[in-house]
Amino acid sequence: MSADTQPSTRVDFSVVDNGDWEDALQLGDPEDQTWNLNGAAFYLDIKGDDDDASSLLSLSTGAGTIVVNDPIGRVISMNLPHAQWGQVVERGKPYRYDMLMVQAGVQTPVFHGELKMHHGITKGP
Image (cartoon, rainbow, N blue to C red; front, side, top):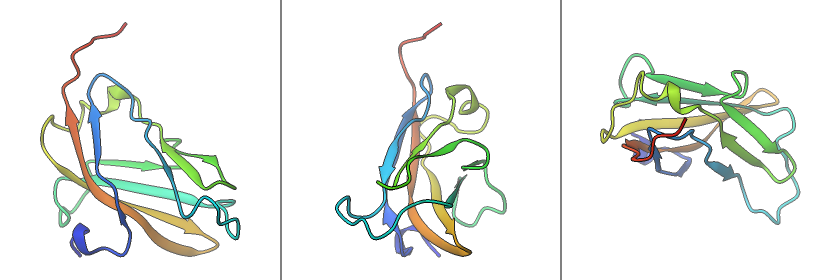
């Protein structure tokens, strides 16, 4: 299934190669307190194309590269050090990703879209 026709929310990311990926996302309506992320696990795979056999990079709550910051407010964030980008992601090329939430045995697609890395100018320590 094309990422453009998935039953999840499209969110495109733009990251730089001189900084960590720390974007935060909130699931659902902030005023809706009828559900939470307690016990939820998240998985995100990045590919060059939807049909590629293997992922270039995989993030997950188990690996600590996706963090549930606020289970009641349903806020998660990416936690990927910049040193891991250069190994697999080329600058300027659009990559595809999607993210799954697994909670109480139910696997739900929550986000999908494109990810592009850009060249950062400032070099830190």
